[in-house]
Image (tube, rainbow over all chains, first blue to last red; front, side, top):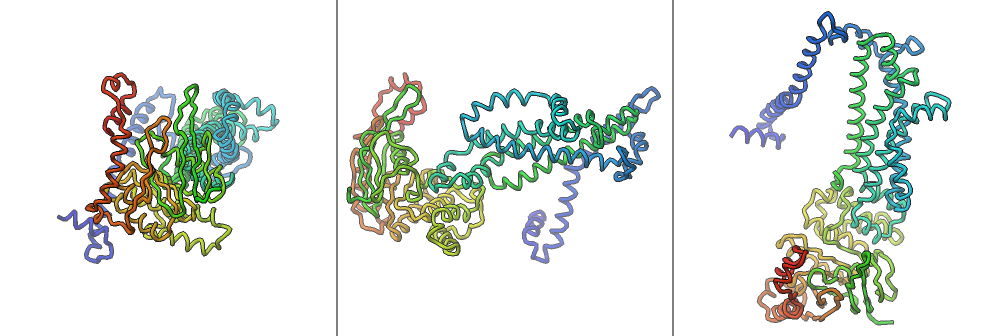
Length: 290
Length: 284
């Protein structure tokens, strides 16, 4: 009986009698959420950190335990924005430098990838001509593009951006073209009956209909970009999280490497969530591909 | 030049898929007057949807042609608005936006923006959907989607309204309700309507004439039945009306006696296509 009162109290918050009950219900719900969703990952992480601590605490351990990582890198953790000139800048600057390269390369890949995907999705001739090329080129590992782009651009920064671009573009092209090909015949017929012109068809029908596919390509693309930037930066040097890791390795600062890996993971996760979030906003209500 | 509003002239349709050519329609001829409500009925696979798609301009006939209001149909256009069985609303647009897309495209030159807005609301009010203007298709029921589809088609001010089994995917109660609405709207607007159906009651209730198609391949128009029942028609009163039952019987006789799908059982078993075979058995 009490449960039903509580539920109705939540549905009609205007009823002052039910108000307190509703708040209590909300509080229990928050607690339940914490128990169901927050507790398990926290618990598992704690257990894993404990095991790591145990394994690496002995005298012969080659890797530092988590407590030592934190104490070694405490300066870096609390001072993310310091700038002593050259490569000696805080972790936040390192990550932002990498993110900037990713942003340039990724945005270019999105523009070129969606355009090429539309072309390949719309025209059978273009698909026959380009698809074999795409299928071969997309298997080339990101870093294999680096020497050729260094040779072409004669400069490290555009080369890194090009590596991001060439890594992210394939899933975007392929998913976009699949999305375009899968536009239901009914939607095309609606466009034909209304006599929509090319531009109207593109932004009224094609883009929204293919959006769920396009966004799954964008999501894969952003993940690959972030994977590639770390590797590329290790080779090109300068400010950036990739070179920071390489630099730390050369200086045998294992704790710094571990901290950097944690940051790389968190940033990659956030990039993925960001694209998912934008995708959900844009494709809201479109059940066609989700 | 014919005096009729819509003329379907000697349409032949052959589909070629690889080496296999299937002759679907054979010399289909039909003349429709302005304001007439025509139903096309026939067993599934008889090519009635093909006829509708040709009138819509979505496919071109192998030979023959369609003339609407003095000009030949060569491609799809808003003067032949379609209502599909599966509503075909765009899921990323709201109810209002779905109708607005059609209105803003087709009536841009003849109406001002404010007039178009009123016209959209007017058409949605006609199908009783004003309460859900900002809902997306996924958030409304199948019957409601079909109403919006009808509103979208009507809002284009078509010369002929093409309905492809518009109530086929709906439950019986919703279907009856929508049929009544279509009759009410038809009494008001006097549209020229071409409707595909496989429901005998629906055909008799709604139509001025019922076009009965023979079985494919090489399907054509078998008989045309004029329904001289006074309007407005009331389904409950008509249920006891001997004329209504006579018309019903005429259509049933055509479908199940003259055009019965005869196939004996051993042939059935020999056929690979189990699915269609059992369907045909059920139909006969």
